[in-house]
Length: 215
Length: 246
Image 1 (cartoon, rainbow over the protein chains, first blue to last red):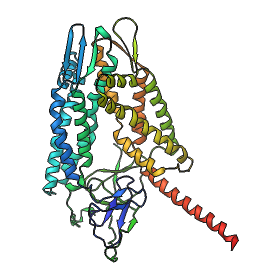
Image 2: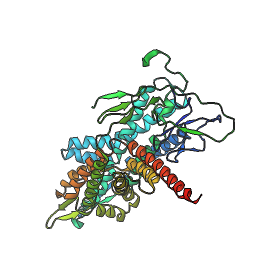
Image 3: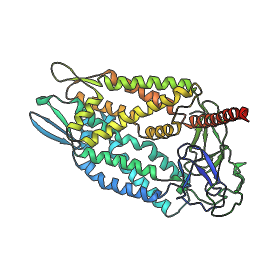
Image 4: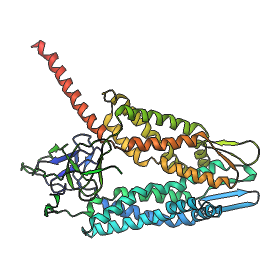
């Protein structure tokens, strides 16, 4: 049973279910409020796919500078050195911290690009209204939502290193322009997954499970 | 994993016909739960502590039985505030290249990043590691302090909505791992001694995770019940005051 067909609204803020009992036509741009908390109620996130695509496009555009521009600049009496994200991972690897190097690689390089690819795939299939295989695609969506904020890791690492390593002639760490691009990628991919509506991955018919599976 | 119970699928009542082009009329259905991820409708069932309910169709988590009482949650919030204050006022690490150790606090590190020409990067880290975690703890204190004594704080609804937003953007656990990576990388350049703030943030991570595990549904439920009670009492008092004048 689908909530949309029964004209049941799920408040995204407080979780109260309300049923629309007048005869008006419901669409996603209804101007109605939750009777409990006053939050705007929608059957689906309005303009979900457009918003998702916009955030994804911006994130993809910034993914290149985020990885090519230096995120850290170290300088001491012997000169200046720029480090990209990948370079930082190399430093960790060379220092023997393979576990941490792997964690940073996954959080900073793999997760952002996998998020962009996965959400593009989900948005593309939702747009084509292909409602088959809802379960594996919902699992993918849940995975993207769960790992999303871990990409912020490198932003924290840079800020802390800048604060910690400040010894004048012996060594200074400064943040590079890559930090801004990288932070923007993380925020944009989080916004993209927040504006994607996973309910678009499921069929809309009234009786989608006519077999006596529920017992 | 705790044992899970799937909520029963519900047969919803069909909408009765009313005149067209009327304004939207909504009837609350607190007896139902809708899966946020696949839109399946379920009957709400009450859960025992530690039980979880999952969607029949997509296996999404629908709800969790509460293990911690309201005063317990309040205690967690007070402890969280203590950890937050320690975490921001004491040094995260003491670092020395030669000579006297140089203690570094989290606000100092953010300020240095700001000064070094990355104010937006500093704001992003400051928002997710300091501002939103603070909002989460402060709002939980503000809500739970009166609610653990069966009273509603003023501005209950906006506070709850802000809490939900702040929880999404609070990244204390990611900051914790970031601090670990930074310490390891700095240890190659100088001698680094972890400070009290690092441990305070570690405890804060555990406190925030355990206190927000069960979600906000119980607070919404109690809040709306008490609000209805208050309205009823106010109406009663109004009637009592009017009665003798007639």
